[in-house]
Length: 370
Image 1 (cartoon, rainbow, N blue to C red):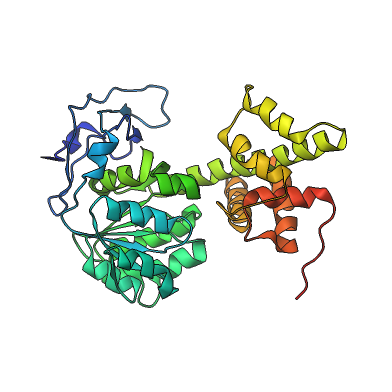
Image 2: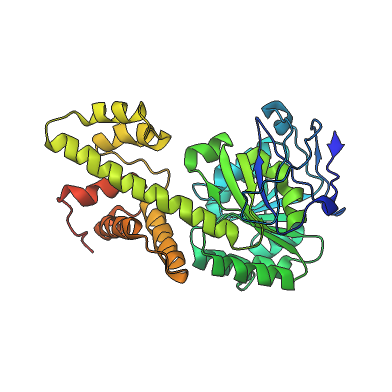
């Protein structure tokens, strides 16, 4: 096993790094602090090459090969904390356990920790205790309020942070929230990256997530092999806030696509076409997207098994609208889609999959009884 040992001088911290893993791991060229040691089998990397089209002063794409078999053998010489065991957090933590990592978990509802504890994870009763006992702590929370509370609140993770530790926030939040958490973690002497993911329940289970990371470059390099266990690719995007912004833009596009797809399914049915055939036609054309072929058949049958809750999609659209407002960028299509998700959420569909937004277009929704 070879330890990560990289020359930070080759790459400025302001750089944007596109980093792809699993079948084509891409390593950046920044040093890993000695307090973190991640033995990992790797082949020789290619050197960074400038990309003049990048938004930053320099961009690097660096790759080497890492098979799934090698990924399974990742060892972290230290303990990994995991805060938040919901739809995403549980399978992500489970993949780290399967890879042989020493995991300590916490969740507001303690019973959600039981399965992982039975598989060998340790349990601590607060985020502060998890952070205090671990070298690196991941947080996967549902919204900005939860992310702030778990990181910065009473018995929050920041209370257990200190020099030589790192905090990785995988939650989907706005840039201001991410920067606030970053400040609290830095004030405690620790390192911070935001690393929201593109992907839902199934990719999380399969270790096929896409990480959109930003923040302390050395911590990013430290946790890269852990990200590779949980994901298929990773992108380093520079300073804190860029990861949050990228995730909101991605989810804004996704929410708008689903709303338009819903309109198409219903219109095809109304004019006497078979919506299942529409799904097949779309899947074979230039506008093909895995989301359509995966979600379409269930939507035709008015079934919405939750992979990504509708309430979270609406939250992300709301945050994206705020981001657009902050830079005076009109996004009228996303704004219209947001109204559909708000209607579906108002009618009690918030906990169902975001594909249930189609129900807001059927015209048959009834206000939930209280």
